[in-house]
Image 1 (spheres, rainbow, N blue to C red):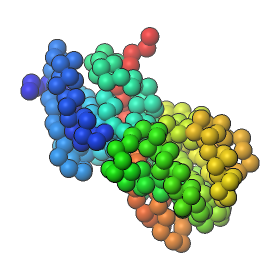
Image 2: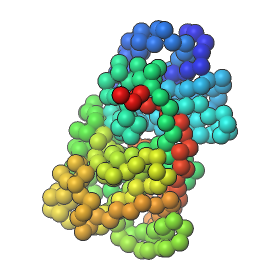
Image 3: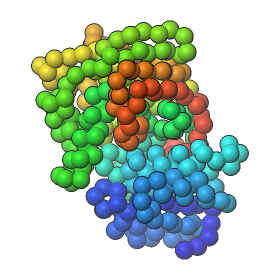
Image 4: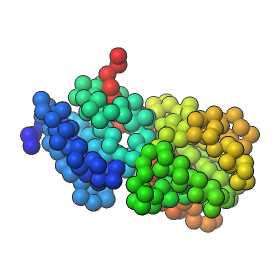
Length: 300
């Protein structure tokens, strides 16, 4: 290990433990670059390492969306003048953040992009004090995420197939809406029964579902999608259109761009932040425009 301005935080357990064996290949690609490397040992460790690391110009998350989420929170917990740039080598199951940042799917190309790429500022979301780099969703989507976590451990599936099978299970067994009060941008409040409330920075979640296909990750706005209650036949009919992002014009789908969203429910409601599941009665979501600097591939 050599000292340098770049720190790689590697989650060896990412993608069913396949990331650990990739480390020698990544190190080979970085042999002409000075860097340090740390392996995570438990949940929350990546955030701790990123928060406590000093004298680094760039911190690179090597893993999936959960690893990036932790590294981002570690970086954002530091003083604004002392926040390193965020890099990504995507080795996880969903890798939606790499789509948002435009990072190549190929591990070798992504590794080289960390070295030769350029810097670009992206928006950061906040929900109940937790930062997110890609997406927040409450309702049915959170139940899908929880089932995907289970399937990930029991079936070793990954990517879009993992979330698709989890979604089918939830549609067949847990298809119900939530009654919520939503306050938009701190002013207008409405009550509604909703199946899904998603507020995103990137266009996809769940390994590639294009829930907000027109999202712009540096426009200072959350791309919001809400979906009204649906019967099982209605949901199954619309599912293919949601996968490819062709659902936004449907009557049951409502799209908007917001700076903040407050969601309140009398009953505990499941939600997911970058794939991490939580259950609350109140979700306060807002956007921090261009709050993090990221390493993206150089323009061709």
